[in-house]
Image (cartoon, rainbow over all chains, first blue to last red):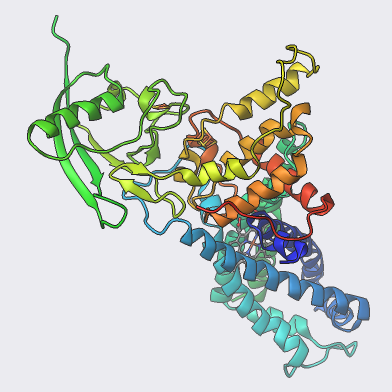
Length: 225
Length: 263
Ligand code: HEM
Ligand code: SF4
Ligand code: FES
């Protein structure tokens, strides 16, 4: 095997791919949240629609979005490969398996949390991303596709808002372990910086999903349903 | 004054050989002194089994003082029992309330096949060491002590890693049966000392290649290994292993595959 493939398919190599893609996805969440906040601008979606048009037509953003799709795919494919490998490492389980001190349940359930995110991702892409790209969509006053209308109609339904809240709780728990974990995977563990990275991770895991969840809640309340 | 003794219900994994399916068997035991070690309690059981003509329970043990790493027992959901920083041989029966039910299982991992009852084959660890967990030393007369200056801080850290007794509790505790803590301890111990520099890069690469070939799982940073390690080896050593492996992989001249050590 060529050294590059050997390193990337080793257990640590796979983990490093998980960590790098996970951190890139975390960065994406920040950008995505900042964009989404324009839904609350109170301008009937003018700013948000202009932003959506910019994000789907600018060449450099398009390149970035292909990188993002690839990152998601890599993260998901690696997570499946790693989970299968890890299962096969213990063919016969314990009868009395206990939980060890200081081991968080989020760290033990990254696969389940990831699956919640994946299910959400599929629904989310179908309803907004697919509609924006290929759906029949009306235009707003400025001539941009009126994605705001699609979003506000979705967020006027309570079950849709509930789905968002549950999924964001999933993202939050995924990052509760994942954020700091990815630094450990990359070999960055230091008496001076690790406590800060951990706190930053907990803050990130709470604030980012909270931001995403507040938008549908506020829009639901505004819709008056 | 007669000592107060205790009674327990033991549920022990019995398996005749590697090919046997195996199963749990229940053994009530009484007259157990709270001052006995866990292994002495099993000795007592075995003595009684032998008298009734039943095959005694096979288990690994050697030093019985917490330094050899032989005594692999998964007790009530924890490798080496409920306490932090203790091996099974150093665990005392006073840690278990009277009349308690105690489940005893072998380490469970693809890479640690059961030999018999509670005894597993941990030769996979030996092969990982053989792959790179050593330093080359010139023969001849012994060198002076303290000839190579090493700061106290580094010496302490290397010593903390060197405390690993190769017991395999980290693998047993990990939900992925990963051997990362063991390999990390062995790589760390040598990577930070001047004596370990000659083989430093090849060591990290070869030991990880052997670890993967043995069928251990990958680390998900749950930290269960450190929590259950009788020598309390910390997670920072795993980070160092990741660093050593990545650094070596990117900078060493090993472009091909490594020769793995065969069983
Ligand atoms: C916005 C979406 C996501 C973000 C920000 C994210 C972020 C992360 C981060 C930072 C890690 C830690 C990596 C490490 O421990 O080194 C991680 C691990 C993991 N992720 Fe995700 N993830 C996302 C989506 C998903 C999805 C959709 C799945 C699965 C279908 C998934 C499955 C996993 C699994 C199984 C792990 C643990 C892997 C391991 O430790 O070996 N994630 N994720
Ligand atoms: S790291 Fe700890 S648990 Fe693992 S083999 Fe060494 S002493 Fe045992
Ligand atoms: S018998 Fe040696 S450590 Fe327990």
